[in-house]
Length: 244
Ligand code: CA
Image (cartoon, rainbow, N blue to C red):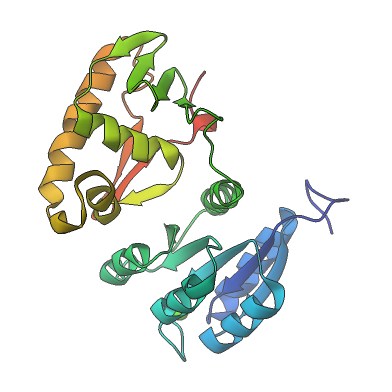
């Protein structure tokens, strides 16, 4: 194996893609970056390889020749929390959202950059290994610190006054730093099952949360902390992208 992790085995990625050309590019690029790559041209092969190899992450094209990509997700989620990153076409918006709601962890849209793809896989694998929080559950992203036990958020040590809803939104987003959180998931986690479809709740409170964080941080490094993924949800930028 060549690449940055030569000498120690990298994570295993199962690449599920029916388009031979795209698959070949993925296999080559990921192998270069140190992944052990298992490939599958259809859903049946994907599930067989998944059973046999138990990869660290699955990269899944939704449009497969034999079964629906959603079925692959459902089958994997029946007994494993293996991270699943979707490869979606620009015309597959509805399928993408459905896949994310059914347990896929993230997505990249074709045509994608290899760096972006690698970042998504890396974050998905890292979080599957365990939560980013320390023993007391405190999480931090750049200058922002959240302490669930004390119900406190601080920016460079100065407390930010958040409502309970804003606090909970930020807590869920920060506990998934770098990863996508769908609007449906935020509604379920913060408001509860009965609020499915009330996307405007999320929109209004995220806007308010952004305003408060931006105001609490005069040097502006938190202005773009919460990134909107149009039509899908939100993502707190990965800590490694932010200045400390
Ligand atoms: Ca396809």
